[in-house]
Image (cartoon, rainbow over all chains, first blue to last red; front, top):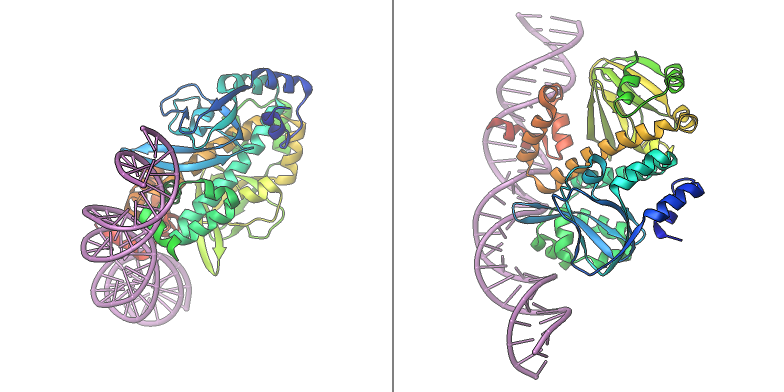
Length: 186
Length: 186
DNA sequence: TTTTGTTTTTGACATAAATCAAAAAAGGTT
DNA sequence: AACCTTTTTTGATTTATGTCAAAAACAAAA
């Protein structure tokens, strides 16, 4: 069965009609490392589920890339602003390894919310989880030193941590690459 | 009509049965400045809507209070972890002015989600909005200097900004009160 | 008005982290 | 192996911010 549906089901019951509708509308992509899943300014986007590989979400601010999240296999992800507001995306999503991605276009998803109200419950819960993650991230940035944030991220990500290039970790932690290198030296 | 229901309706249609159910279960509290709406460790909580006054959410970490959000009148708020996970609250919520608060207990709300599925849509959207706010907050903490964050907050809150004591602003921005004072001197 | 307690500011100094420039190390490619 | 590119580290220096102690300003209460 599709990874996307399996992940959705962790959040709540899905009727067989709803599952059919989802299955019919899921598209699967094979992407190469480095390719972009979504660009800033793009109007149409999707909700994605990663089956293989890992991706990052980042902003481009005056020539500089700012990494704001990473997602590994078996994760639901997307460009929140684009999805929630049906507006041009503010962020880029890039494959950091060769990836297999399942996607449901936003337009379709909005229709499915209407046709299958149970999806609202699933989406509510998954959004709630994301909120809790974001609160933790903000709290870390608000209260922890650079090295505390570094060790905290290691603990949070476990083995996946080592798949992320150091430059991207520094960006995500909001510190310079040099500082990160010095933290690691100890 | 109840402020809570009016705010909910901004996010989606509410049937009259659902409205009745909400109205029957809303409790209204009058609280004095300084009183706690919710304490860390408290198992039962509510989703709150502020009609008057303003409150803060904060954590207590090794004797120190860390402010993580402020809410002003006509805002939906609560202790996310407590609400989303039905667990003991991790945070405190305190009235910073005399307040009028409308509340729906969490237990009841979970029942209402089942009995009135349309509430899931409303809650999904309101949670989505909160996510976008959180992302902005995290981004600010990740990329901006202390003074940039300060001026950013002023812009974000407008007049309400001046209702917040400086100590709480410093805490929320993740800087020392002395640094805040020096930023303001200029 | 005086007293008391709290909030805010100031000054001196210590520490954390950024920046700039360059070297070293690691990975691919021919 | 030799070459090129990218990533990571190192050293020197600057800048931003924290800490500690005290003074000043403000607000509430007697």
